Image (tube, rainbow, N blue to C red; front, side):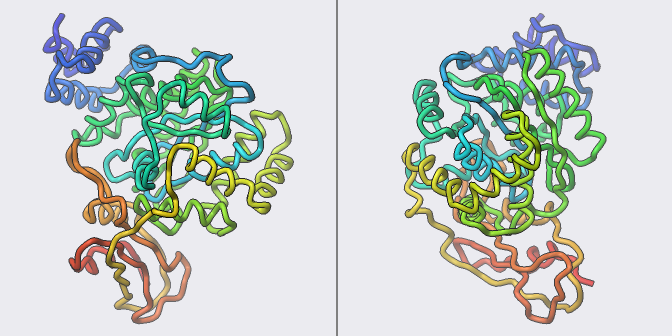
Length: 408
């Protein structure tokens, strides 16, 4: 069997053996399989899917392409959280510090943006000096010291996932349940958490568009967790509307800090809910007690202090965070009630501004983005400012921005 045979077999809708998956995927990691060949195989997987057994095998290949942190390497109760991605989703930057401030240990392996959805690593890379490429020992030390650390896949951590993740982002192969499950779960398993919460975003601004697909993803990830004796807690959340007010890497870091300082909106409510669920499961307490602990950490500033400690520990200089040069208001040309804010159109505009990747090696402009100024249900008058566009030139994006908002 060679790579051509593997591609053809999957193109015909047949299941691949672990040996065939290894030939293709490990071959790509080693450089013996080309980008265009792996893109063809990934597209065949997107179209024809994978059996549970194939997904288990692929997860295992991703996981064992690097090192797995031993159970005794980090003292304390280890938890993990992952979001499948959405517009304005900066929940990890909020939930990690909350749980670390409550004594839990969270070490996260995260990814860069996929398609129009932002990635946590891109957000962290917007902070000058922040090191997202930790060695395994530095990662362990950071989790032990701070309680929260976050880095990307490296030569030590799931390197196979890193190269496949980058290729999926620019080859139209993002929206595949087996590929999403293997990517997420390999990173979660590599850090050895006791409880793993998966925030499955559902809607037009997410990788997963329907509840049916979201439930399919939840099911396979729970099964993967069971194979490795891990508790996986899937939670489905809405992604038809952007999450929070800020979209764009540096802007989202700023909003995460605002939430940790006490700002209340849909984002803060979701983060409190998800943090409480994970704390409840890890500590075996009631949801009421968990929620009280989470809110207390935010109220007393402990979670924000933990965020600052986390950033400084990984070399970040939060005071040097910068947004784009020009901030342009977008004003309403109609009056009425704001009925919808499109997550999809918001993400597409952020990508057009330079906040995401179209090609694998594209450089991201970390300072660009959109700050939403009005919310669903608001009464809108002529010339009310709907949002602000953060951009590095004077291009007029008014037409694209107005399409984000539905006013009737």
